[in-house]
Image (cartoon, rainbow over all chains, first blue to last red; front, side, top):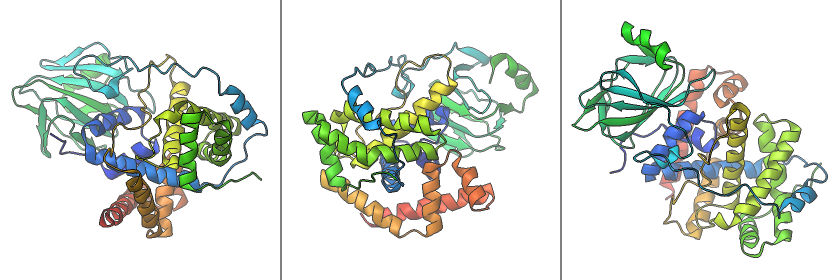
Length: 210
Length: 189
């Protein structure tokens, strides 16, 4: 089934322009692998990029640039090997990434970091929620974007299944709950720290690095 | 000043196919004259220094030589393909700058897989033509918004600074512009 919840047009444009932070780029890549509609929009935006590139004023290359490049044509390029495939059940967009250790946040909810958040960089994490579980009510220091890999969650805006993307800005608090009998696996990119409402979760945060 | 060679889209596609099938160095030199100075401008616009921009443009040209066989003229034009190569090289360069540990692999795919597989060569050309036409229908400010989205390091704040608009206004203007562009394109189908 194709996804029902899509990234915004600006996000798709930023993806095509190469302007998304890595964590968000991976989320969009997971979505567009499953969504023909957004794939074709990204292609459109890339055509805009091509068009823009073609109309940019030329900047002179250094005098011997062409000769130097010609001399390198027969060089062996970087090995064109595919990246290590991601572990079973994870999307191809995660090829080459190291998945961190699973850590329990609280019963029924576990998290594995892929890109730890750093100053100026969004974090990327896998979240695993058992049936019936909720990720505690939380807000964000910045943008949050997530994509469901397996299972489904619901919040006040609707139900999200595989490939569905939820995009949130800064202050919005929400508390997604797993629906159905299947464990929900999702990928979440967060700018700034998650802000849990519950004091115990806030206490835990430094220990789990989210 | 530079030799600013302008080639037709059809000629550029043909050059890439010649590189792929005949390993034609003359075709490569022609591609270089057209694209290297533009890719260099692109890298400069995105904040690379002059030496780095020159190196990245050469790197983009080498990538064109190595990956020419993957170019699919039925999917997109030459400029679109070169744009994705330049964009991915810049993303990799940024990643190298910030990553200490080596990254194993290509999370930046060359081409977003099998997209628009049904398009014929003519459809690809038509859709790029439609795009040019759609741009002609945008106001100067709208064109600038889209342009800056591609060519600024921090697009939203750069637009906000240049047009002296609050960040929120920039976002809603950009959203409206994209909706308009989408509507023009969809009406043209």
